[in-house]
Length: 124
Image (cartoon, rainbow, N blue to C red; front, side, top):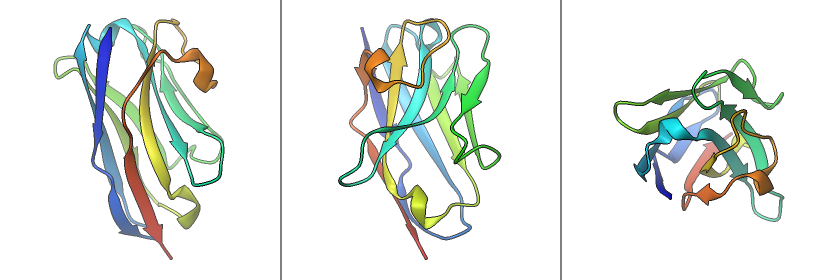
């Protein structure tokens, strides 16, 4: 079992930056592939970025590639999402998730553990 708590969301202007954090407790985050998803009101939960277990290979949604960076600090048991060049369409609640699948997944259904989410609002 792992518990996940996100932080770092807020209100930012177009072109600004934010760094989201996801603190894991329970089993170490290094034993899981980790990911960020987001969900805007009335929309489906959308894959943003994932980091594979152990190897640390990352992959991203096309909409955020080149602007967002996912990373993990195993010593702090923390997952990060650095978001640069933010756009109004990035506005959503962002969720941290964990799965025991080695390579992770772009599908929300493949993740067993979720945080409560943190709101990101980008003003135009």
